[in-house]
Image (cartoon, rainbow, N blue to C red; front, side):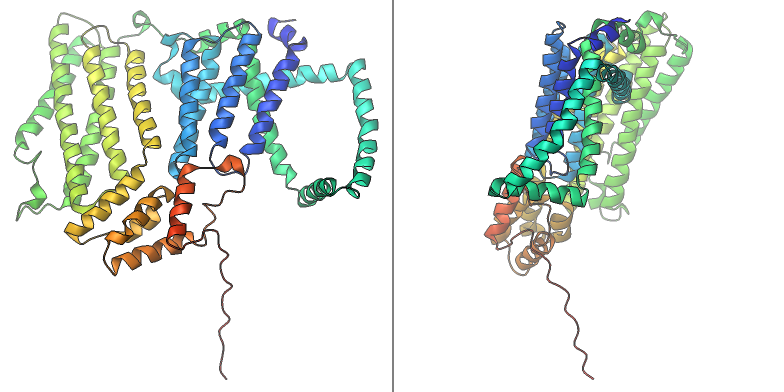
Length: 510
């Protein structure tokens, strides 16, 4: 019998099952068919705490690297209780899933050098596959235990006891209102078949959690497998197929192209061409096309430099190649600055939107990545190290965005522009922004003149009066963004969750 099988068949297997069942049961209770709120960080914290307990129980300990990944996951999950933006909820879910997958894989082999782009991208798939395989293995082992003589006696006792308990419970339900309420609730659940999807959710969640905890509990026996499958290659093991001459031609040509482009367009690259009479350039063409093209160039250049440094052959031109690469990075940084400037001009002319703000944040992350590349090319570059530092910058930007109520800021800025431009996109404020923006909109209503104030109030009422998206049915669905939006709507006389009146039947006069 293998080490993993021996451990699973022993008494410690019950610890893994109990912890997994408790975490899966908690998740089914507070997450299934529930709005995002304090339930997300509560369950995420419970799951990583259970994983840490399993590691300590089996004498494996908790390393700081997977602990950092798990802590970051909890921090990001906590933002689900602060924002009411469905898009951010989706991004939080994806980020937490990714970080928990990384935590699972690093729990048995916490080497920092394992964290590379390939490792992180494949982590959810690899972790999911390993969790399912481990869960199936433990289910098979449990079925062997159930077939033992001792287990058969216990199951027989349960089969005899269950109908007796049910009989007495039904009788007592007629004598106590609390028991009667429980009986009626059970009857409603069974008659509506609502327990079926909830049970499926529990089984799926149990499979993932059980597999994760079982994978961690096997520790050393799984560590060698994980190391063999995802261990990164060192610089000496990489096949450098890009020759020094080819690399020189490629980088020098790209550098020449970028700097020629900058020289040709220096007169208006950072200017305001659309404001120039007779330029024939609109703000939409200048900002949208300019941003898209320049950002794609910057992103592609990062990938080009990474490939060049990782797969390029070394030679007597290394110093020259390093200088050319730095020239490319400098040009791209200027291009990024131009793209950022174009979006700023577009915002000044047409107002702020989440898409434009996200574009600017993305450009800042790309700029940080270019700065990291600048430091790396001065020595033997490690792509995994570049990825870790860039990913840290991206995570930091993401955390700022999910905790900062940027939609309220966008609403305030756009409403403030109305006093100088006389323009306000009411449809965007009320239809495209999430409930996060409602408190800012309501607070600004008294500052707006008629008829724009009534129009904005009417659109807010039209969207939220009959909407159920702000109604929380359980304590674990509490969300600060939804709570603030409800309170703001009440101040202007909008009660959310109202039933729509039935359509009136037209009276036909014959």
